[in-house]
Image (cartoon, rainbow, N blue to C red; front, side, top):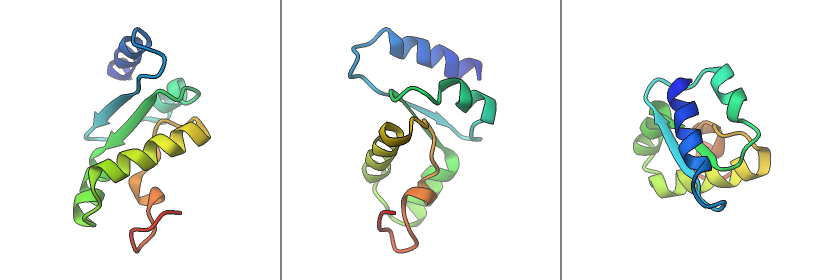
Length: 92
């Protein structure tokens, strides 16, 4: 959670329209995500997201676009890629 907090602090020093992508190989704790869940500037991705995108041949750009949109809609910085795409690669 400390690394996420430092990154969020750096993001706060950037322009209001700037977004940040925080990648964690091992995922995120509920507490860590709850601390930053109300913002819409921080997007999180984990190792499983990368695996799912590569395994299903979904471009990382498409995953990030959906993550950004869902974060803006929900205020949640992390939504697993598998929740953003149905079994056939379409959107939910």
